[in-house]
Image 1 (cartoon, helix red, strand yellow):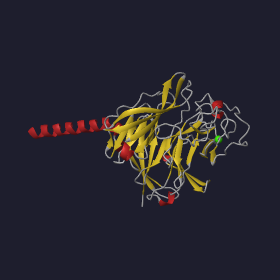
Image 2 (tube, rainbow, N blue to C red):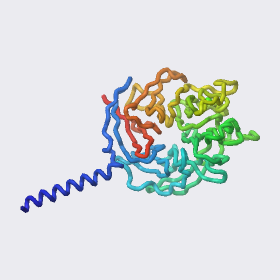
Image 3 (tube, protein in one colour):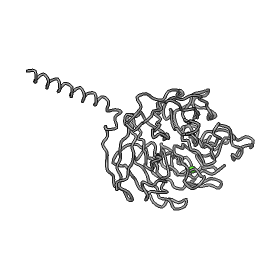
Image 4 (cartoon, rainbow, N blue to C red):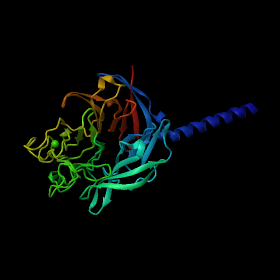
Length: 385
Ligand SMILES: [Ca+2]
């Protein structure tokens, strides 16, 4: 009798433990199985590091091995070796979490190990509506201190579309911030009197670099580096150069990868390879004098978000390749480059059927990917040898 009670108690214990595990599974990395993938140049496995992330958007690698992940609704979370920190990072500013707006990218200062500075891009409220902003803060004891907003897109306008926004540091220490045309304001992308539809370049404290292309020119906002952009949600420094590449969403068709050069006009909406969602013609031109052509464009759209160049040792046959996340056609796109030309493309992760929001190489030479959903995941791609 006594033994029977023991076994019933034991059964009860295991049942409760199973229930507890199940209830935790929303944030348990074990919730998703490891998958093996074959591809043209490397076989790899997809290892889930964290699940249950609410529309994760951007990621950054801390020197201690932990990973910062933004969630669009406004939380900044830390993924450690054994999963997520139980509490989000404190001190994150209030964001305009509506439509495509919210907490967007995160980047560490190039000298983070010494100064602890991090940067967040987000949609912020203000007179007129909302606009892309960037805050700089000191990251200490899992909290943000000494917050300082170093950039506010001018003007703020109504609507919840096309905020961009990615952050990228150039080798000279300047910070690039990408934005969008805010949806209903596409004509503004051709104006130098507004930040709408531009990429801006700032010093790390938010001041304007003296050598910015429009600094000192009357009628132009001095922060602007390039303009004529529709909605830039991917930016990365090409290794071995001082040049930042970007991609942007087209309308229906016409997503582009561009090489950002100072003062250049990337054409939106005067030239485009896409048409309006309604089928209406936005422009009958795909090229015009004084406007840049993309390195590559996609019709139909793949809805690109996040990008990085592979420069590590773990996937030697991917070295120099450009990786782009695709939201609409749910894959990770690998582009082979020769010089500035795209000579090959391959779709990875199609079997996941997940929108890919971000991709970044980690300091360990592995590739990290965020999936965009209310139950988003942080995945790591590891080579199978
Ligand atoms: Ca263009």
